[in-house]
Image (tube, rainbow, N blue to C red; front, side):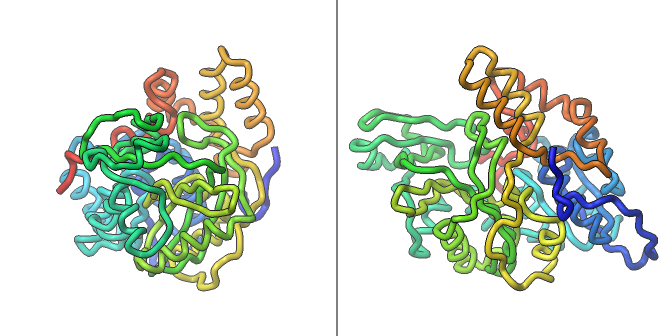
Length: 392
């Protein structure tokens, strides 16, 4: 297992006057992307606290985290969740709130209250999460997009081309269906249909600030669980993807994390299939220093490419995938190859407990993921993902 010294920096206790330490609040602690953010801000001299509906989660044993607090689940109590986060911001003198994953749509409501949240307003965030509204927004900007419509609109293109249907607000690949040309699907206004594109799947994770992209990483999956990549490699030759993302961010004056999934055709043309206004696996390719500088505004020069040309994996997700593929020789080999050739995103010699205790701290996710109903990714966000019935 190889370690990048720029990324996996040793833990060094700091003797700093309390009054000079800034506090950052992360609104989820159970995912590896959150651990990257916590370690990055801790190394930069910030006090890191985490709020999560689960008392046991990945970050709770990290040396980078000063305090871990339990909050209501936003799926169960939206008002209570937002009120508790606002109380934490006040009580802990938080100077920056960073939403991490699917809870971002809920946390965005705090920005509307005037709190220092690193994201857009709730309506704009929801518009990006909505697979139909996102495509329409990109069209108004003048960016190329695949043919996309609500299923209730009975679009003509489904008669002549294969297509995909998916819920407007789904995450982690939940509810995706593939259809042959001419076949019918439910005519539901909460369902999006989109032409099925041929080409390579590439994703980009961006840190955006006032419409500029001070940091990003483009990557492709090397192992997938459902439709979520759990092992991945950076892509350096990605001009079309980066240009599309930069034009979108500039036109929308976006601030916060924003990620896009693309299909890149043989002609090099990149078309987006959806947007995620949150952190994704691409964050692991950025060094902690670059990540913090991009978020707090100290990085004005855009980078030219992902900073680490390396294969990475989420070990426990891969291991779960390996166990579930024992009946298929080819799938088992692919999972074993990804595990063997990639570096884990969570392991750090100076901060080992999040990795070593992951099976204990993530038991809820693992139990659900071992069933046929959930991927590791969907099991990890079931209680924080946005649903239409949660609309304000």
